Amino acid sequence: MDSIGIGLLGYGTVGSGVGKLLKKNAEDITLATGKQVTLKRVLEKDPGFTHPDLEPGLVTTRIEDILEDPEIQVVVELIGGTGAALDFQLRALRAGKNVVTANKQLLAQHGAELFAAAEESGVHLRFEASAVGAVPVIKVLRESLVAAEVKTVFGIVNGTTNYMLSEMAETGAGYDDVLAEAQRLGYAEADPTEDVGGKDAAAKMAILSSIAFHSRTGLDDVPYEGITKVSSTDIAHGVRLGLTAKLLGVAKLIDGRMNVRVYPAFLPKSHPLAGVAGAYNAVFLTSDAFDEIMLFGPGAGSVPTASAVIGDVISVVNTVKGSFVQNCLCYKDVPFFPDDDMVSRFYLRLRVNDQPGVLAKVSALFGDHGVSIHSMVQEGGGQEAELVLLLHPVREAQFFAALDQISALPDVHGDPAVIRVEGEERRQHD
Image 1 (cartoon, rainbow, N blue to C red):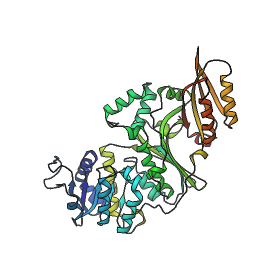
Image 2: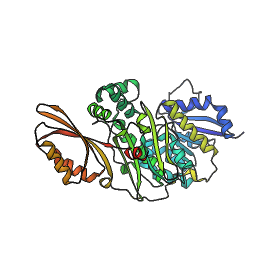
Image 3: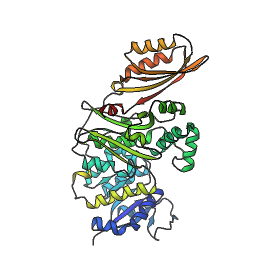
Image 4: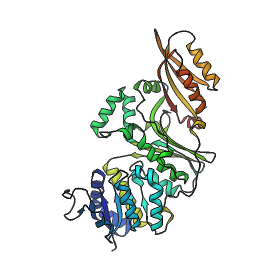
């Protein structure tokens, strides 16, 4: 029986999970591929690195020991970052090795270079684990829906922020307290900046939109906002309005152009994504061909991510050389739709002086810019009140121009709270 050797770069949380699954499920992998898939080498920086699951002699500190081994046909990169990981992946691809990676930031920033190297060498670059963990959305987009003309990809692609927003809604706790709890439970890193700031989700959306729309999207093409400004007050207002707060990655195809962003948004409680709680992820796809599809599951963790990596390894082994699925399928050059021209609904909370005429001033400025108020609630009393408004769909440039003037009014205090509202068109469709 033919043997396929694996060179594993990094034996941390996910790497050790891959090693365990390769050993534990060896029989199933052999049945699925008709080949013996074995771990041949592990790259680690520390020459004294040991692990109870690793046999003696497997660990090396030299990437050359992997690249020059003819028995190693698949290199699995799990060291992360965009420095050494880029160098190692490029060298592996140019050496004729297939590469499997979970490195979303590397793909979002250097995907074009990596896929060009893979195509030139006629090898595979697989990356299912780079976005949404064990949820097989990349495989579905690349293969099952390749001819379906997907129009929208949006969803919850970061488990840390989804856990935090879920907890804030359920307990009423503030952002800082929920972040501390997420770190204690291991859902958030010691430095959570990429997660809570939206960069992690932006990298994933760059990858997903590239595949869905067959056109290259890089990290620099994806404006992103995180959840650092989302307060428990706004989440509570949303609950009363029948809305659930989520950090969404949103990619839309509009009149032959695409818009890809990450931002916090409210969803109607009836929307399928609204019920995705905790550290889970879910991606919602729409198309004229199939209407709606939602993919749901754990978005992170050793075993789910390792499972996605193993799935890619099996796919590499089973895919005929030269098949279309070994490249990125980015054969179009779709232009970007400007953010200012996007039409969105907004939730807005203002702190204002509680006196006659203030609401009239706010309404007048909105009217001057063609912004229509759907509903308004005023709370508080004494010297200060809160205005909570839901707006009708409006071109974003008009809304923000009006908001700049409203924020400058002497009767308005502090920064306005602004959260987009998504998913309303689905409720109308239903």
